[in-house]
Length: 298
Image 1 (cartoon, one colour):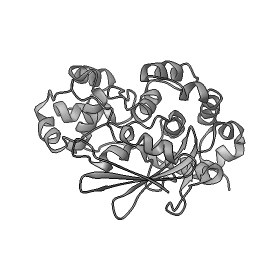
Image 2 (cartoon, one colour; image 1 turned 60 degrees about the vertical axis):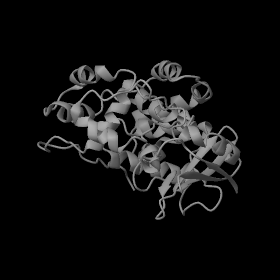
Image 3 (cartoon, one colour; image 1 turned 90 degrees about the horizontal axis):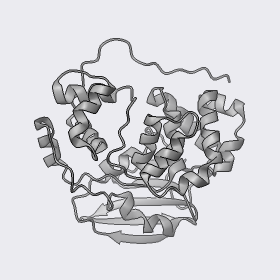
């Protein structure tokens, strides 16, 4: 086990910063312990690793295991938002003023690992979260590696790109992921080295959107997590535009309407949507909802 202590210069909210990297309550790569510590696995450039992050008296304590331990501790500040520049951001809507005051420590961290963000994002395309998380969990339990160190039971490390390329069709089907998402992930895995080498969010966006099956929404979801991009807006999300419109105007809107409303936040539009989410303002639930599909055969 290796350890690092780090003191952020702001009031870190560990759950708020790390929460976006978890995918459902039973994500094999992400756990929040009863004591508030966050466990996370990663396939680093040096190999698999497990990271435990806790806060004690305002100091972050990072503990890591496995071949990737040194890399995980070296990049710990970036994961917690140390590279996030908030200097150009200011609240433009009165409804966000209170939540911005209550969350002055909000930062957007970056993992630096594209495939870890890409695979669950593709699985989440145009389906409800429960369906995507079920597939993610099944695939990680079947093809992931056991987490190094004393990680909580059941934690796994995302497989290498070559493994994603070789998963047979019947296992994709058994996981609950249909063929189009399977092809998208397998194709991306062939280009994993180039994707992981992208130096900027802009370069990653260009490379990602050249791949079949990856559009604006998926690219944004990946860049939010891998690059900590504060402007990567998830256009095309099933709920986001409605929530933004309702919070800022009292009426639901569509993607073009959301883009107009968030134009004053350009450069920080993703950050603005995080604050909007923290207001808890949601439009009334009416009409049909997307259901959880299950066409697996057992």
